[in-house]
Image (tube, rainbow, N blue to C red):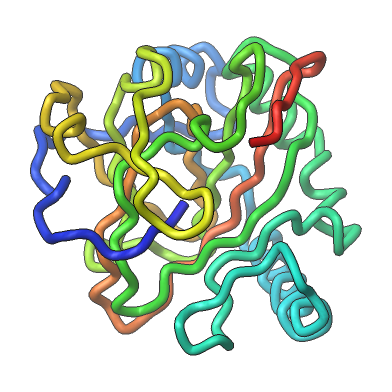
Length: 251
């Protein structure tokens, strides 16, 4: 989800809006209504402290045992040592394959979206201290799924405070399809032009969260993040799902 640095002020301004936060085991119709309206809902209570501890333990094992031998599915910071993104975790560790397939998550996705999900991939992201901006983009611009049944469960592995570069979320922007993205950054990563973002009239919410909270995010939702100005990393795990019977066109 992260990108290379951009000029300050490119997307920092916007009409502030609250982000709906609901309990994972609360009324499913409330979760579904918030998701339908905004394209994202903050879900609390799905993962226990013990769950998070196990996830962190398995991630640490992946970094020490597997990453040194990889020639793909890992991206480093400029120092060449600190992992920025670890892709396709389910390919390398049974734990993440099992986590991705757990009915705990798939039942939540189905109850909120109305379609039956299948596991897609698991990814780790860490915005390091003083880490760069992630410019506004839509994840569905990079992974083409038809029909567009494709969501992320974006899990905060630690508390996310305003100085840690939290997500910025353009509420309701997922209802308007995929906007044109510019090819400006490394690899295949693209982002929306400042001119496109300046023309938006969507309310913008900030993704402040506690450890274990997750953002159930339509991948058509425009989102970004500001720099992490704190002294702590902002680690997260994204579990991706697409609809049963959907087709993935690899870009």
